[in-house]
Amino acid sequence: MNSPLFDVIIIGSGIGGLVTASQLAAKGAKVLVLESYVIPGGSAGYFQRQGYTFDVGASMIFGMGSQGTTNLLTRALDAVNITLKTIPDDVQIHYHLPDNLDIKVDRDYEKFLQNLIAYFPHEAKGIRRFYDECQKVFNCLNNIELLSLEEPRYLLRVFLKNPLACLGLAKYLPLNVGDVAQRYIKDPLLLKFIDIECYCWSVVPAAMTPMINAGMVFSDRHYGGVNYPQGGVGKIAEKLVTGLERAGGKIQYQARVTKIIIEQGKAIGVELANGQTYHAKTVVSNATRWDTFTKLLPPENIPANEKLWQQRYEKSPSFLSLHIGVKASVLPLGTQCHHILLTDWQEMTAAQGTIFVSIPTLLDPNLAPPGYHIIHAFTPDWITNWQGLSPKEYEEKKEIAAGQIIDRLEAIFPGLDAGLDYLEIGTPRTHRRFLNRIDGTYGPIPKRKLWGLLAMPFNRTAIPGLYCVGDSTFPGQGLNAVAFSGFACAHRIGVDLGVKK
Ligand SMILES: Cc1cc2nc3c(=O)[nH]c(=O)nc-3n(C[C@H](O)[C@H](O)[C@H](O)COP(=O)(O)OP(=O)(O)OC[C@H]3O[C@@H](n4cnc5c(N)ncnc54)[C@H](O)[C@@H]3O)c2cc1C
Image 1 (spheres, protein in one colour):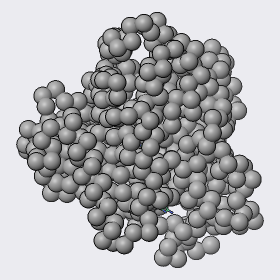
Image 2 (cartoon, helix red, strand yellow):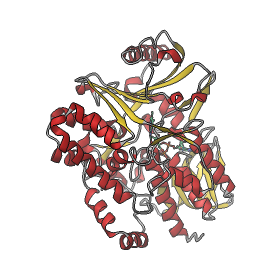
Image 3 (cartoon, protein in one colour):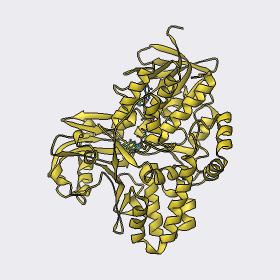
Image 4 (cartoon, protein in one colour):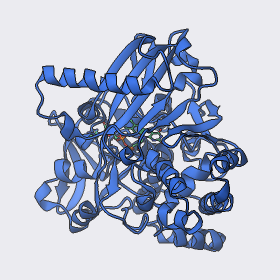
């Protein structure tokens, strides 16, 4: 053995990895995080250009409220004695949809319901019953401490303390949103609206979106609310690293892990691209499951349960992203931070069909030079559409695609093209390279309709000593979701290693 023995090595400093790391360090474990990039955060990172601070991905942040048990980002920071100022967003999303649906999801629950009922008065009862049912899921979650569902003593403790919440969750675990929505809602256009309500964070329609996740998103937006971290989303990861280091943990950047070392069937360490090895009692991978089991471990030895998982889940598309700096005068008065644009329902799940927009400078103006705003516009796209091109063809294709997105954005931001100050275009290839995710994927999506979240794996793997954390573990994508996964992973490892504090 040629390196110090850590309790835990974590491959990757995404939010899932950092929550695991900071939780374990706070409990006294000896933790090392190895990150291949130059800063922490992964898909919750940032980059700076000409006075602009752009979020690379996530910008609609749940889990930063101050009450309940589901505010996991706040709780993860608290655990390492860190606070992060946030700015509340009054409207989660402003939808610009086909059939002239122009709907704002207000932070105030009643106001949102009334906005929606104004378009569908004949469904007033159904709308309320559907969203109320989502609130029931949330109330169950928000009444229990969220830790590892793989830890029987915790499950028993939680059950004895709050049997009704636990039974409620067990009931919803195998359900998808579509099953519940169709019980209450008949209008096909309203059901399409429920589809895009799901699609905009799960990237699948309601029929394939687990009810547990919807319970969180559709309710927390009216409870803890959507809150933007002051200074940009990248601050969450930076602050978690500060907390991690203060608690005695270590992080190393530009440290690309190429191999998980297995000895006698057990994960005992990792090897970096430069040949350096590190050893630990346990190894956690914050890389996607596909990266973990086909690149960091020999693909021919993939465990049977991972094969089964790959039969059930596939890679979602990646994104084409436009990071735009624009004159403030382009934004009409009263513009909201987050928008969804779709012109044809048939195109909702198609490549470059739905456009997502985030304008974080409406909440934190310091992210852009005075008099300017950031518009981050992104749309799902597949890596296959961007492969096999010469460098010239690639640049040309980027320019054409960006021009088309800007044209479509002109519908809500007239004068956008003329007001451009800065433009940087990212493709699925960019996401693959800088976010270090296979094919640049946003994460796993069901290949076919599954039983809600039942098939989503927890943190332990078939290989002793190896755990996974992040969006290819329960409960899936999103910063608060991967924070949940981080809490659960740290809890399970803490029990396995006997970390007491
Ligand atoms: C465009 C976009 C918009 C999004 N919008 C939102 C949003 O508004 N709200 C929201 O909540 N979520 C959003 N998400 C999703 C959210 O960002 C992700 O679900 C979440 O950040 C994933 O976290 P993770 O812990 O799984 O890991 P990741 O963020 O994938 O981080 C993994 C880290 O591991 C590192 N790594 C990987 N392999 C290795 C290796 N071999 N060696 C060393 N390091 C390695 C990577 O460099 C990376 O830093 C968005 C994502 C994207 C791409």
